[in-house]
Length: 364
Image 1 (cartoon, one colour):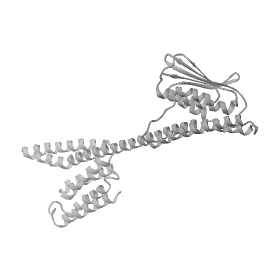
Image 2 (tube, one colour):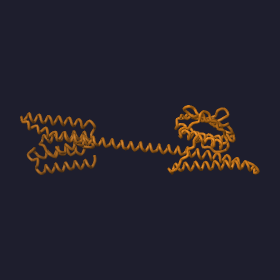
Image 3 (tube, one colour):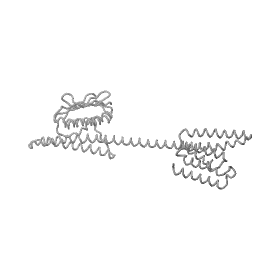
Image 4 (cartoon, one colour):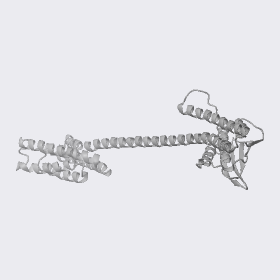
């Protein structure tokens, strides 16, 4: 029971008692204080209107019937309209329909009885008055209840849209972070692995072998410059800086394979492919060569690119050998598989005989 209900009930009690004390109901019943009994019952019904709608309606009906039998009092009748309104708005879903039909039946019955008793058609105004008391509050309550239900549904839809937008945002952020992680891994891991391997080899060379040392340092410098260039491009993309973005593709494979000391073989008629396909193929070859340097030592890798009518197949094989001692986080295969999956390509990686093979076929 809320404070508002108690205040409404107290107002009914004060107004009804004031009307009774002023003598407004004198002569209607004897003794006159009997009219206070249904008024008191109606005050309780008003207080229970929202907390217990069904008991409130039953108590209010008994109270208004007793009031009509003793001699109608305005406060009790008006308070009953509040009980009907509260029961319609806050009661069970079926209650408004029951109250509406009951009100219509009572109002129509009152009009028929009044006309039959008096023999005058104008006596039907009793039915109109009954409808004002029994039907109008229920209709008003139904309208308010419907509007509240629509508002609640709209709030729920808005909250659902907000939740979906938040989920979409989180998914987009996760996808973008995964993409950035793949790019950073491919750029950093490849070039730094080559640098680490050649630096290790250079340190192992005898001091008098200056030519081999210079070649190792040249490879180190070449990979450092290439890695810095790709890193600058990636940072420029993240900062949304204007400029031409150079996306590596299949035409960059000869230089990439040459830096790794491998061999490149092409079959079929070469043609321009979608940028996304060429970029993914380049990154997969780059990561495969990096893994070959890490795990196959100095054994050369072989890269084969086969142009099919509706696809392009890229295969990287390298002999299985001793590890070169470069740490590996295990993210390379995951990144390659993700790149292939995003473009609907078939991807396979694993040992085949005494070699390790990475095979991916992109639909074009």
